[in-house]
Length: 175
Ligand SMILES: [Zn+2]
Image 1 (cartoon, rainbow, N blue to C red):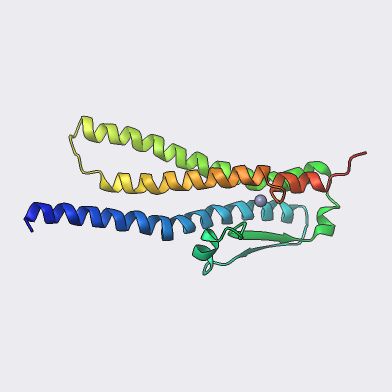
Image 2: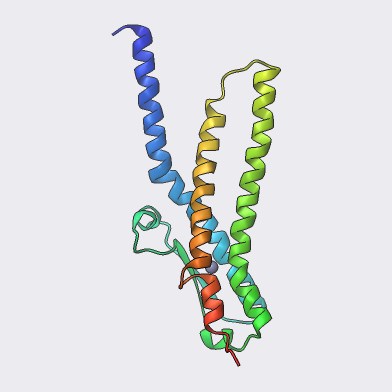
């Protein structure tokens, strides 16, 4: 095989392996991280109101759980339902929306990074004429995958019957 062709073939193989690895291994752990932040937000508010709570996360099960359609989350906050029901409706709203707020904060940071990277990208190409940006593209790819996954999770969390919003409404009594 000619040297240049060999180089091109290797580039394609490495790129394909990177894409596969990023989706099968890296993405699940990125989503695991945002899930932990989400659960920690619920946990912190629950604790501040004196409700017994604990975060449960299984780092060994992250990859199989991520691809299992029956697993709804990569982590969960267990808490005393009796103590939760002692809270007033404003306190319960704070507990239930804390996770969504955490997800939106993570999304905001990812968006900010992508915006700044865009400026850096422009600078690199326009002023330094440096066209080596394979790492910028690799990190952007991972972040964009993460943003898409997190937006889908947030939509599900707001619209699903077992999500945070429906759980809040479910326990509120209507006069
Ligand atoms: Zn939640």
